[in-house]
Amino acid sequence: MNKPKSNFRKNIALRLHSRYVKTQAKLHELNYFFWECTSSCNLACLHCGSDCKVISDVKDMPAADFLKVASQVATQYKPSDVMIVITGGEPLMRKDLPEVGGELKKMGFPWGMVSNGYMLTPELFRKLRENGLRSATISLDGLEANHDWMRGKTGSFERAVNAISLLAKEPGMIYDVVTCVNQRNFAELEAIKDLLLKIGVKNWRLFMIDPIGRAAENPELFLNSKQFGEMLEFIAKNREEGKIKTSYGCDGFLDDYETKVRDGFFFCRAGIHVGSVLSNGDICACPNINRGFVQGNIYKDDFLEVWNNKFVEFRDRGGFKTGICKDCKEWKNCRGDGMHLHEPGNDSPVVCYNKLLRHCK
Image 1 (cartoon, rainbow, N blue to C red):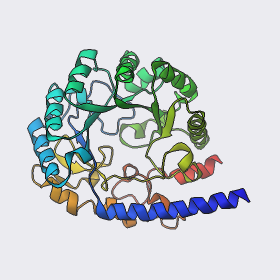
Image 2 (image 1 turned 45 degrees about the vertical axis):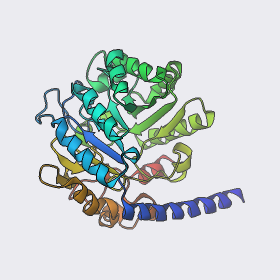
Image 3 (image 1 turned 90 degrees about the vertical axis):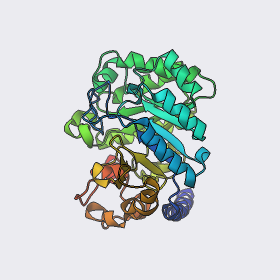
Image 4 (image 1 turned 60 degrees about the horizontal axis):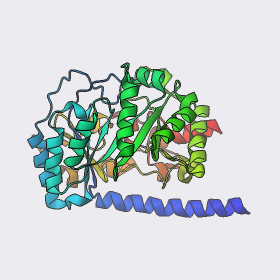
C-alpha cells in the first residue's frame, strides 16, 4: 500500500508544481541576471557551449554599457532581489572585473561569477571580495589527467583545486563545485568526492554533457543510459549520506529521481526568472541557450521592454509540443526539458531525459 500512497502524493505535488510554473511564467520576475562579460577564454574546453576562444572574435563589452543596463533593472526591481552572475568565456580574463563588481555593489546588487579558476590568485580573490563578490562556481571535471584533458590545458586541474580551496576557506562565501560527467571521469566520481571532502567543499553539482556547442562533435563526452542512471543513483546515495550536498543540474525532468537528486521539481527558469546580456549585447536567457533564441540587443533595444514583452517561447512552451514531445504524457512536468536542449527549426529537443531514464531501468 505504501507505493500507491507515495505515487498519489507525488502526482499531487507535481500538479501543484505545474500550476506554480505557469504562474511564475506569467509574472516573469527577473531575479537571476547573467552578464557574459567576455567571449575570451584561457582554456579550450571540449564541451564549451559558447565556443569561446583565447583570442575572441568579439571585443569585450565596455563595462559602462552593462552597468547602464543594471541601472535600468534597478528601476523596476529591488537590486538586492536580483543576483547578477558574471560569466564568459572566462570572466577573470577581464582586468576591470573588481571595478565592475564594486559598481554593482554600490547599486545594491549581489553578484557572483562562474569561473574555471585558472587565474584566481589569493590577491585577486581578496580584491573581488572587497568589491562585493558574494558567490562563485568553479568547475572540476575529474582528477588531474581527465580534468586537464577536458579543459585542454596542462595544469588547469591544479589551478582549479587551488581556487576551490580559496573559496572553501573563506568565511561567509557562497560557492559550489560543478562536475560535467563524461565517459572518462565517470569511474572517478567517488575519488572526486573524496578530494572535495578533503578540501572542505559542502556543495557539489553534477551535470551530464549534452550534444550542444563544441561538445556535439565529441561522443566520448556523453554518458549512455545505464551510466546516466548510475550517476543519479550516486547522487541520491550521497544526499542520503549527508557528507557533501550533492545535486543534479537543471537540465531536465527526471521522473522518480526528481526529489531524490534535487531539492525541488524540475523548472527551467530561463526567460522566466533568468535573463542575460551576452558579450555582443544580445539579450537572451541563460548564455548556454542557442543564439537563435536571442530576443533583442541592448544597443538597439531597451532591456526592460524586451524582458517584459518578449521571451514568448520561454514562457509559453506550447510551441515545443512537437516531435517526440507531441504526445508525451510527461509534457506537463517537463515542458520540453531545458531551453538549452532546443534549436530553432528542430521539432524535438536534442536530448529527452525521460527517454534516457526509461532505457536505463
